[in-house]
Image (cartoon, rainbow, N blue to C red):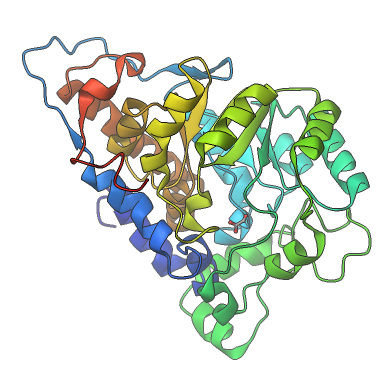
Length: 387
Ligand code: GLV
């Protein structure tokens, strides 16, 4: 097999080895995909300042995320249907994260259940919650996450309604896939995926099926969200969930300075500056462009994480330079998983760790805590092009 040197190599293998509907699910943005594209192209506009003749021995990428020691400022983001990219995908990704010394976040819309991931890992993982109309289901899910030892709740605020991703509709996305002729033809070239999938029992939304009452269709993300997600989610409901949870709380999906101040004043332990990987509001600004404004709005103390657009260690460095304490990656690890299972996630994490370390050294920095605006050059008007 060809030598894998970057996330793009894993992406190519992911595409080759995974059914089209799941690769497309990961590699999509909503509507015109403008925001999805700009999440990455805006990172490319940021340039790094090279520094020479600086002792670069004794570098460290280690830091803390909400008090937890992490080997690098990267966590695995919650990604729906991860267990459809590869059989038992959430367990595989959680194990790779554990070995790499970084947090794994389990999505509500995962295939492997909370209990299943807990049974196959030793480090506490984080749980991401989508707020449903059914409060009993929400409360029971929170109890399950507590019982499984989840050490933080990541509450997603930007998906009360699902952004339309054209490819998912065209592909007829479901979990597990319905075996239509196009799906069967596609699977003919993805035999390893099918073989592994036949060996596992984990082929349905593991946190939903058997737990939610009166579910008419739990195989389609689109119809499930339309029927079950709570359109009335507001700060008073968030407070109810915070009280019910009682542990560390990370608010995900902040992209606006006023919302960021509200999240800070609400007392969240951290916030994730995110536009959901360009999968929700098409036309929103990229997360990296909003990040410095949000840092300025909330001040230096608030713990800020950032996702949407990170595909390399250079991107992690740029996010930290523009005000993030740490980052989350979604597609970058999903490409690894789809390419090579647990080993692929481990490879993705090692690629990013090494890129961050080498880039840091060439920027004349030894410690991720010292990264800042002095490390980057921004195009004129980058921060106030849109007002
Ligand atoms: C929701 O989890 C999504 O598909 O972005």
